[in-house]
Length: 172
Image 1 (spheres, rainbow, N blue to C red):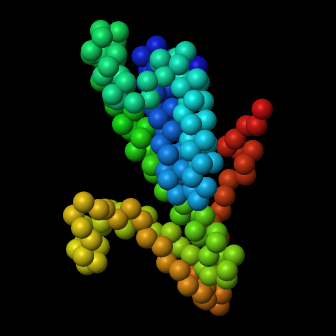
Image 2 (image 1 turned 45 degrees about the vertical axis):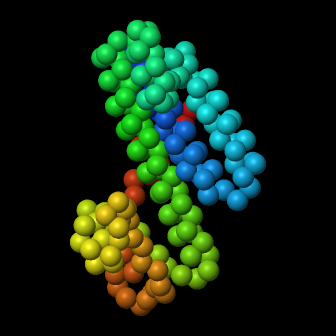
C-alpha cells in the first residue's frame, strides 16, 4: 500500500497512541502494580520503536508541539499529528473499555448468568444520567443486562448468521 507520506505518519501516530492508551487503561486496573508498570513501559517503548522511523514516534501532543516550537515540523504536520493522536487516544480507551466489558461478561457466563451488552444507551446518555443522578462530568458509555436466560423463550433460540472466516480474512 503506497500512502502519501503525511498520511503514513498520521496513521503511525494514530496506531501508536491507540496501542499505548489501551495499555494505560489496562495497567490502571492491574493488581500487580510493579508488573503493570513494567508492561506499560515495554508497550510505550515498543510503540515508539515501531513508529520512530515512520513519524518520529511522538505519540503525545506535547511532544509534537515541542517539535513544532523548534520548527522541526510545520503547522500542517502538527495539526495532522494532533488529530491522529487525540483520535488514537479516544479509540484506545474505547478498545480498553470493550476488553473489560467482554471479560466481565465471560465471568458472568462462567458463573451461570446470561448477559447482554447494550451500547445503544450511550446515544441516550443524557436521559439515563438524569434518571440515575449521574454527575455532569460523566457520560454513560454502555449498559449490560445480567440475569438467567429463559431458554424456552423463542427469542433466545435466535442465532445470527455469520460469514465463514475464510471469506473475510486471509491468514499468512
